[in-house]
Figure 1 (tube, helix red, strand yellow):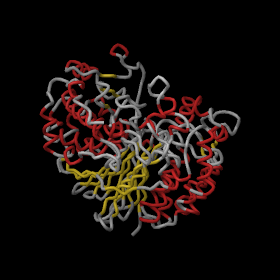
Figure 2 (cartoon, helix red, strand yellow):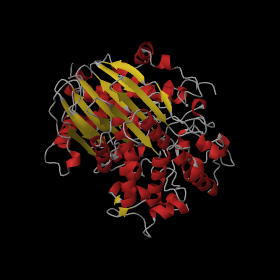
Figure 3 (cartoon, helix red, strand yellow):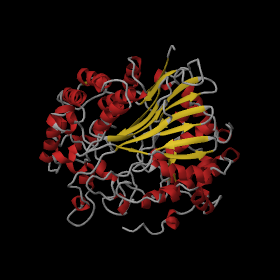
Figure 4 (spheres, one colour):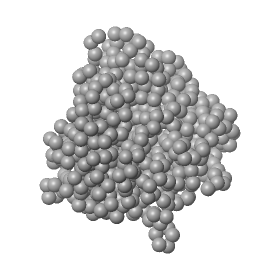
Length: 591
């Protein structure tokens, strides 16, 4: 397999960042690549591996595999612990997408545990008296929350694919919720940024101000009510969360704050198994997320637009220009065509067609930016640190790529009293008003308008890459930037980079509207940025005040990835060096 398509043209600055990311002098073990494990056979991986955004979650996944569980049990354990230790990003009150590969059958499964709109949901509920969008109601409190999906996913996966009872997979999360864990800097910062919303609600104050003050770095954060909720889920399955004591408290907590949930909203929730998006890029089979994720279709479009170009032979500016133009076109289509496939007809066959990609490619000027308003057309008749991802591979060859979220930092800010469950604010991911951007700056139209039981469009893009000699599992949080981060990760793997180098790659993003390339501080050299501007691009470099940037260092994402090199017989993990508490760990298995 050719490995030089991308790496030969990497900027010197980018290469230095990669070398620093994997250097043995790193101060924290979690910033180093997981140890290589010698292979005993190429047919199956030489061990178990978990890469997640928190070392406690990584250890929980490995623990249940030591106890006889498979990658799917480990996915439940890892997800549940992240739900306890990362309320800033995900939790039982949110949802997610779980991409699974069953080694025995060779089947890929996409489990859609996205939140759904309650029966009371209607665009009119999110309008001010003057007719404009009520962003506060869309992003904060009871009306911003959809019906959670993650607990139902735990039950479904344990019953359908797991080797252990749900009670065993949830045991680490229950223990950590009861005993507590140290508050880390991102948790404390995030709380301060959302404090005014969090402290509106008595249920939230009871959890987060339990010591009489806001959580501070180093505090031990305990959640006994959440431990009780997890225990009911472990003992009673679906009814332990969506009915009974927990269900009644969730409905009461939402409605006490002015929302309109019913017991039927909760009881009617169902996870959906969907067929993953599949396409070919160079020597890779790419398996990724279908709608209601926008990521798989958008990524297929971008990669199929880019495939004929030899990116390694282009200079930094020319290569970035082409990648950005592919992003621009895919995000334009996302806006108009994508939504919940159970409610809208998506022209998926056309959007995934190589002929369609060729047509989009033909509109790209190789030396000049395409203004986004020239691509606007007509809408189809009346579409960060938030979110988390983990990757798992077990010694049998099963794998899981899981991205889960409560949407914005700490979701809606509302904890239903007595449950410990912090609810999501996924209603903001709907197109609550046609053509009006949401919190991530993306907009939509009728394809993504809210309806009872409908799932909002998402950018979460858990992905598998499979070639004759390599298998990779990857994904990341980051709102609309998720798609472009996974895209850059795929290009990195295609260039032959290892897992840790892929997780450390500098990032840039374009989403059609606004018509701007946003970038991390170290993504471009000054010369490359000026060349892009000369082509007609608007470039937002955080440290470049003169060019309209934010004037300070800025990074985003939290990519977690695992690579099984079947040819070399090695298993490696990559945990994003931007996150000080993440960990990628590999454990050898004696056969």
